[in-house]
Amino acid sequence: MNLLLTIKRQIGMQYLLRNTAAALIVLMVPSIALASSWSPTLLVNTEAFQTIDDGDGSTNIELRFGTTGSGLILNVSEEQFEFDANVEVQGTLSGNIIHAQDSFTSSGNLMIKGTTTLSGAVTINDEATFGSGIIINGVTYIFPFGDASSTGKLLASDGNGNLSWTAAGSTPNTFQTLSISGQDDIVSDQTSDTLTFVASSNITITTNASTDTITIAAADTSQQTTFTLSGDGGGSDQTISHGNTLEIAGGASITTTASATDTLTVDVTDDSIDGSELADTITLDAATTFTLGSNNLIFDATSSGFFNVVGTASGRTIHAQDLLTSSGTLIVEGQVTLANTTSCTNLTTNSAGVLACNNTDYIEESELTNEAQLETQLGGIDVIVSTELNELVDDQVNALFQAGSGIFLEYDDSGGTLTVHTGFSSGAQVSLSPEYAGAVYYGDGGNNVGQMVLAYDSSNKENFYKWTSTLSSLQDYNISVRVKVPEDFDHWDGSVPLQFRYRTNAASANDNQIDITMLDTAGSSVSLTGGVNFANTSWTTATITGPEAAGTYTPGSYITILIAMQARTTNDGEAHAGFLNINWHTEP
Image (tube, rainbow, N blue to C red):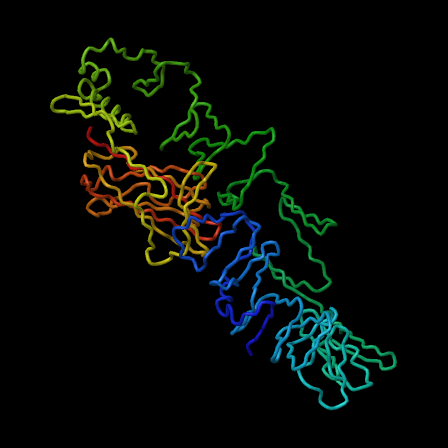
């Protein structure tokens, strides 16, 4: 049954808000904040709500309807919504708490599905339907699910608020529920109910009516146990009976000792180990440490015998008294120290491979007279001289100049000429700051729920676009800006063709990010490097390359730069887009 609730106020106006009022209650959130805290310069809003500015932070916020002067008021100091006219709810009104300060009335049946708390006088002129229980003066009473089986029954409580039907004047059950940990509860559901104890095997139960006692006893189930002892080295099997003693005897050079701590100690008294007794192999399955103290561990590999390490031998110091050889590759990962070699200019080897010092001086520039002599001294290595050296220098200087100065060198290999271009002229750089001139904003058809506003960072003096969303999955919106290529366009800057300023509220690109794409004047996509997954909580200027290497750029036509901003409510994701610089060279 729908709940029809009428809240009567002083001003008489029927049917003011109906379904519209209910929607506004859900969409507006009561909060106190400073004026314009939500950045009211709104460019795009695809969210399922609209926000009203806070004003001066203390004045009530109102939504007024026409010339009636009536509307919905958010009382800022009380943090509550107020209507200045009657409100009628056609459907169902629900919420966590519904409070009527003066009177709560119902012209029809009042149905309460949950537990009801009555703290004052309650008058019900018609029916009232309650759920599983009712709270009176802080005590919860749970009613039985059926009516009494006959007349003359009374509702009796078990002391915990559980009510049941009982005969007038009779004594309620003393124990209603029998609980055993891990088992189902046994509940007495009538006064003549009987509890039966059942004895399992080896258990006896006896009762004494005169003393009102129940005795539970366990039968003696102890049994003597025997087991068979066998050995893998021969001999006959032995049967060990219950109560007998098992003796463990040691063999040659082996003794066994039993102690009071239930410990059996096996001691090998022979200090020598004969390899033939161990089948010539000792296998250690776990990590083992041999501690020698002040003694030495000597491996005697005389005659044809040898000491062979199949895996890896390591340690702090390995010393060979006469000779250390390797039949394979010898890898030394740390520093190599030659004990008999002093500081020297060059380190050389003789025909036997012995290292020695060679203090011959390096080749002096004055000793070389031509390219052939220099190549001879360097063992045939090609030498860059003359024109080749000049080209290398020109390239290095050219790269230095193009890093933003506008000056660059052009070297002609065939004629040996060097041309100096004298930098930027008018229109060599286009700098766009939000709001970008001529920019448009659009969604791509899916996952575009959010708000885009213009904002200002007073601490860092940054103008920026801000994109946010109330959804937990990434939502995106795009900024498209077209820029005209100058009539005297020559070429793009070779080092920093595009610069983009950005910041995100969360560090991870999973919560917020910005991507840059570009179309040339022919409308073809330009392959960019360093233009995606922008995410950094500090203001950062990114360098984007690509247009200097490929693309069609017709003077007087337009390039298009697309900025995709993405954010989600998780971790307070926000995407912030700052200035965009386009760097190219024009002819003077």
